[in-house]
Structure formats: structure tokens, C-alpha cells
Length: 372
Image (cartoon, rainbow, N blue to C red; front, side, top):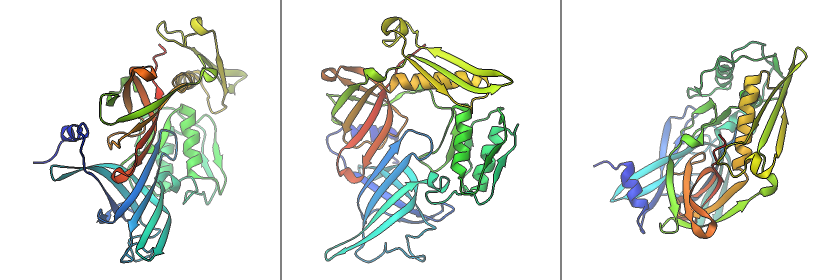
């Protein structure tokens, strides 16, 4: 019988578990060439909720037979990619989660008598766009004024050689002026400029698909895991308040259009908000960005920045037994009365996940607050 997600949840509620990991060696078109599990000694995956590069990883593999010495005819070379899975063996069956598709950044072969290993540094697929591995523009790249941003993004991914169909949120917004990038600039800078115009996000997901889309509203997301002092995976946390960084009012000033400044302001006046203006006074954030070219986009940016500047200022650094289900951008709850936490909802901003239970999982999380 095939395992279900509920079987995995039941397994991680128990005191005993059998962590497993595997990697797939992929060609440049992301077809599977080989699968490896027995040779994995150690590994870490780091995930961050941000634009651009979201993932990095490291692997240590047994290399007793020299299988992982880099060679253009071998398993590891510049044209290969690596997909990492982590999971559990449950009642004799393997249950895996994809944790990302990576580019090989730097392999190192170690020969120390009985210790023959290969250490591999891996980087996010966005490194094919930002110049870290590839992505430098060979010629001047021009996006004419009035170009539909959705079409522009699709063309950039196509020209950059992306092998998977981009997931692009529909938009009728157009570029307000001609964008020109010179040779040696990057595809990433084009994408980031377009994303910043809309206050959107651009990144690669855990399955290697590129995304260009609005940020997800975490208030509409369910918790993927509920931590508490009474459950086995919670290993403690530090609860930090950055009172000196709190902002409850945000003004965005955009481009000068025909002598009139694009402008929008948003304030935290929600009656149940502990950071509302009438409670603590106004603490203003002012952002100037010439990429913002109409009042609607300025309003979106102001709302986005105000939300981030409110939730950023109350954070938790949490230690956990590794849970494969948690990724950057997920929502969790935490109950720990000694830390002042009563099933509070947090947005996962970063994850450091060890493979094969070689250490604790570390999470950095931001407190989710309603501001309206």
C-alpha cells in the first residue's frame, strides 16, 4: 500500500523515525540520469524566503570507488544538475519530499586513507541568471516602453535557456519606460527590475520551476506544523522583539509623471494591532523608488513594505528535530508559555535542514500580524 501524507504526519509525531535521503543526477534538460542514496554521508539544505537565490546546499558522498571524481563522462560535471530529496522510511516504505534542483558549484575530492569522500557545494538555479554560474548578457538588452511585463518575463526566461515552463502570474501592467541593460549585466537584473515594479517575487521553487508572481498572503495560509513544548520535535526557541525597528506607517514615493509625483501611504490603524499608531505613536518608513510609476503600484508597495516591517520586528529562532515538510514561506504555530508564545502564527523566513538526522533543524520565523 502506498504511503500518504497522513502516514508521514503520524511518523513525525512518534519518538522513533528512520530519516532517509536520495539525490538524482540530472542532465542539463533535467532528465534523470542516476539515483544515489547509499553513498550519502552528510548534507545540509538552506532555504530563504527572498527574491532571487532561495536555496543552497552541500553534500558529502562516499567516494571509495572514485565514482564522484569530476569528469565530463562521469556523474559530476558542468552540464549536470542535482535534485535532493529528504524523507522517512515508514514501515519499510520510503516517503520523500523534493528539496530543490541545484547547480554544481564546487566539488572537492578528499583522499585520506580510509576516508575517501566527495564534498559538493550546490547553488540555486537562479545562479544561471545572476552571473554566478551563467546569465551575463552578451549584447545590449532592450525592453521597449509599453511592453507587457508578463510577456517580457517570459521572453527573458526563454532567452536564458530555462528548460521548464515558467509559472508567471497574469498581469496587464506594462513597462513605463524603455529598460536598457548593457553587456555583462545579467538576466537576473532584468527580472528583478520587473518584479520590483510590481512589488512581486521572482524565484525557483523546490521542483525547479521559475516563478514570477505576487507575494502570497500568509494570513490565508494554513499552518504546516504546530510546535509546542508537549510535542517531540520542538527543541526550544529564542523570542526576539526589535522595538527600535518597528514601523507602523509607510509612504512610497515613485516616479515623477508629468510633473506629479506618484505617491501612496498606508498606516497601521487596526484596532486589534499592538503596533497601531494611536497606541505607540507614528513610526514612519519612507521609500523612494523610481520604478514605481502609478499610484496603484505605489499602494501595493506601501502595503507590502508595511506588512514586512511589522512582522519582521518580532521573530523566533527555533530548534527542531528535522521535518521535511517545512519550507521557506510556510506558516507554523508555536506554543511555549515560557517564551510568551500561545499558538502564535509565524512565517518561516529561513530553514537550515540537515540530511539523515545529522543535527537539528534551525528555523528563523517572523510573527504574522493583521494590520487591517
